[in-house]
Length: 302
Image (cartoon, rainbow, N blue to C red; front, side):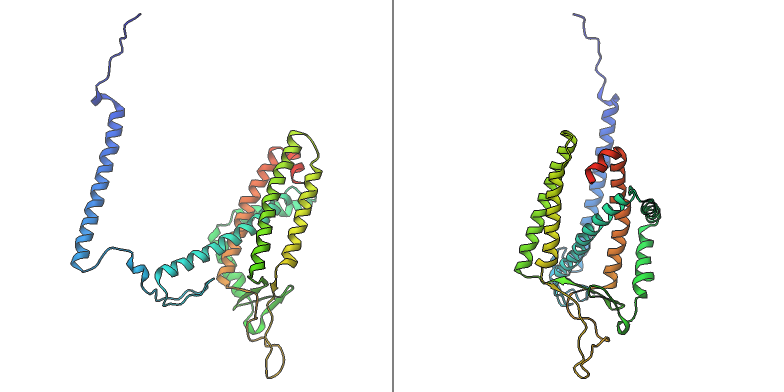
């Protein structure tokens, strides 16, 4: 057996040692500076009679919030105001997630439509939207669209009891009651079942080379059931103009009563965050999915 002639390199000549040592030295310097700054800050706070804590979160916020999903006043605490902000963010996220998915799927499928006009319009629209920065789109939606709505005295009424004016947008909204949560749970369970059936359909088509017609019929039945629950299961409250007690006529100078009222700021933010990600994100992803194996993937979507 040949003798091992490999010589061990001295640790101070090993490049790995110096790389690790340099990182340790930098980390020690950073930690030391942080400790120095924090120590000086504590000394100055003690001299000023102040205390570093989160106790201020229980103090009165003393400011108002323009749009709140729950009751809020300026006398509430900072932590409660923070919670209101979190709920406002979740409102945008949840609504944006649903609308972005629906619009994005429509954009991706329309790009591969057999109709030449629909296909070209979709492709041109996607290219325009994806190349405009989000900030410019938000500015466009707010200043060019929503701020140009008519005055409250001349509010615009759309089909479906939708009212739009500079004072806000009123749309139909289901009454939040125990039955609402029951039907909402049924729809969520149906969505989970539809996802599992979709995976089953994909397996049947790809692995067994079958048509997947049975699974498609089940998905269609679930879609019809969900639409029926959405339209007739929920107790919808429609916005309506109030009646002037003196004249007995509709008072167009007052905002509609009932339904859900959206501020122009919320509507502009939601519109900007839905249009760009849906056409640029979901639509582009669906296009790439269809480009991989056009015939097979189109068969899965049909």
